[in-house]
Length: 299
Image (cartoon, rainbow, N blue to C red; front, side, top):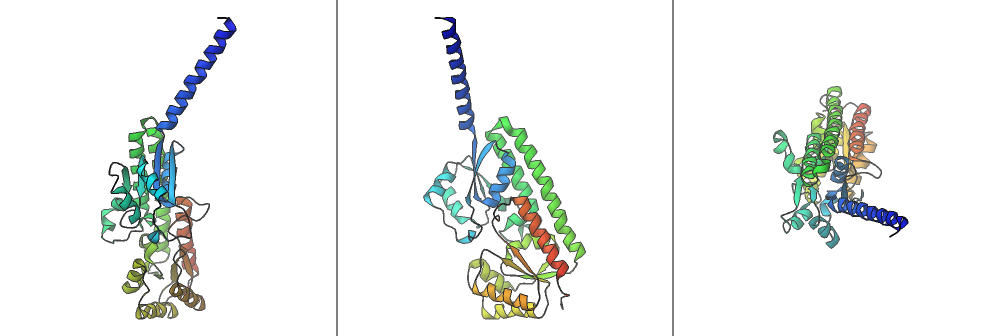
């Protein structure tokens, strides 16, 4: 064999080995599936490009409560290295799939709710910064177990994410310090943990809130009670879930505008172009701003 042929063969062998190594790295890449883009954003922040992350529900106009998984969604969950769910009955469709795939490692955000808040029984835990921080740490630990080569990177990313959630929590706490005794009424208890962290009382009648959670029309008496709160300026703002608009929520918003009462819009999935931290930071800032402009409540 000529020297030229030997050189060519060596180069080809090297390329083949490199390609095999590259394919091996790709094959080992962890697959993370999140039920919504909220948890997908946190997983992406932790993964830092070392794992594939897929979010199933990404439509910021959809109602996560009424979502139904497709066969492709179920297949993605079954094939995942790690699945991140909200839990607490919020994404029940994922629970149904996971019942048949008990070997899939799962991070259940609701299960990480601090004990002090566990009795509040509100499944919208993505508005709880302690939960978001804990989810990031749990994702990092689970990915480190399946991909030890990037364990340090996963944990460093989770730690950095946790610092930023602490900053948002501080922003929330400052709202209550600036506006002690503030109160709101909500079309749905989506922002429960944000309001709690900010020291803002949600004066929504229990019957109205329960009906909203169950997807039912509230009783006329409960609607009247909410309208009384708005028209009588007994609250400082109306908190509206943009993703579940009904005739009743439109009626309440119309009443708030007529009463010059600020409206705070919240969502359950990420607005287009935003990540988790930006979304939560801007929502907290929006609440603070609207309370700054609120008329003095007559409560």
